[in-house]
Length: 136
Ligand SMILES: O=C(CO)COP(=O)(O)O
Image (cartoon, rainbow, N blue to C red; front, side, top):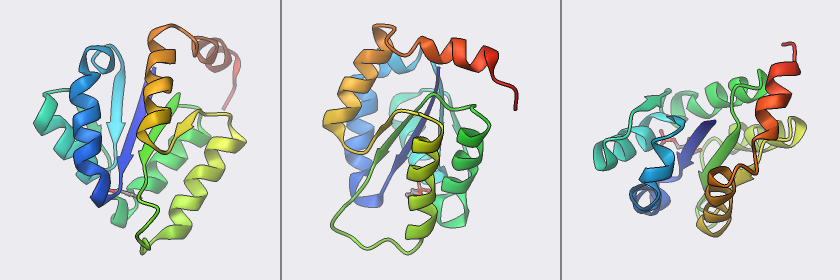
């Protein structure tokens, strides 16, 4: 599975803790992330993370484009609902693309834990089938 990680600044420590806790599962998959999130996760866990641009420079949009190409199977986006983000439209666009393309999206750690356990249990294996049939 191709799993994308994104965390707002106040949620980056939580994302690091999450990735440390679930590194045994995450290491079986391809991990990508927006720039800053990816750097802190890679540094703390040693996991190989493909880092896109920092979110403020278009990293969310790079991940969004890959969602549109069906190259992402799950998004873990730890959002901070209490802080106004400077580039909110890009973020809304990413949520929308997940819904358009039926890509599972967790926006908090409670859902992320369910999603990562679902991936471990094979609950998302249908995406491999979808990906093999889809022409982009
Ligand atoms: O884009 C982000 C949230 O929208 C986060 O980006 P960074 O991981 O580069 O901080």
